[in-house]
Length: 168
Ligand code: GDP
Ligand code: MG
Image: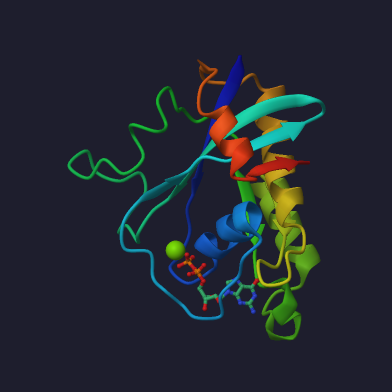
């Protein structure tokens, strides 16, 4: 039995959402910006602390507002049972462009952790820096809060064969 966890990656266009996901799953990075045009669900398997999980990572094209309207069901079917208790991890990507930052890391971290009560991780999808860490962090919070959704035993084999299982 493998537990499934759904992750919605949201944020402004061009911040590197797709790059983070693709670096995590395929160890791949492209300098060319290809705006995400259709929603896509990635289904990697991961091992955390000896337990295997199947992730559903949702990458979506730009939406005008969040939560999206009911006429635009972007997340609903993937985020069944979602509530205000869904763990949120704020990610600051493009850490490699450190010199162009407009706010010290420490200040952002304090704002996110103290004011928003969310976790905060900085990463670089380009250099694969802290990419596994951020998923590990998020998974850790979700598992601790008992967010595990459902059970599946199929598809795992395929994921492993395609070399898409990350040991965290
Ligand atoms: P999305 O719209 O949020 O999905 O953003 P993309 O993943 O498509 O990335 C937008 C652009 O930022 C692309 O040109 C990427 O090559 C670039 N990019 C993404 N992550 C990084 C990073 O960590 N560092 C740098 N320097 N560029 C990045
Ligand atoms: Mg994208």
